[in-house]
Length: 134
Image (tube, rainbow, N blue to C red; front, top):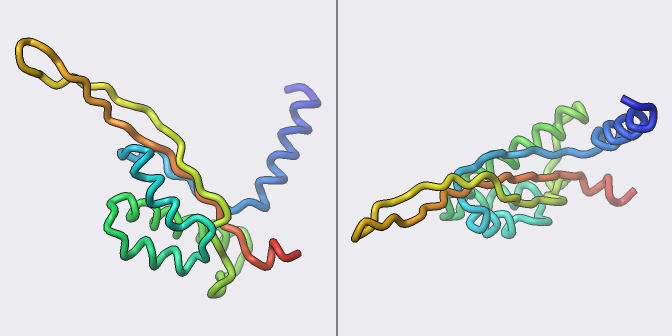
């Protein structure tokens, strides 16, 4: 690795230490369905977002709730303390398209219909409100 690349990589690593996030890779649902759930909690305070996800009827809400709890645990591990009520909020969350499995379904008269089994990747960032005020 060249000197420039090494310096740039060290800067990225240093910047990542102040970010608190969790990733969910390869969720077997379409990105569009996941975005409905993610849009509900974007920018919310963590405890309120957990309540919204808990009582949502969408199946994707279960995965996002688990991911949010993981991001909060990552924040607590990096800061060596428990998060207080109202301290954390969902700063950024986005859904990317994952791999699409292509399958064929038998159809009448010797034809075949395509089935696309989509997946997605969710990334959720958590930040403290006191961190932004500084």
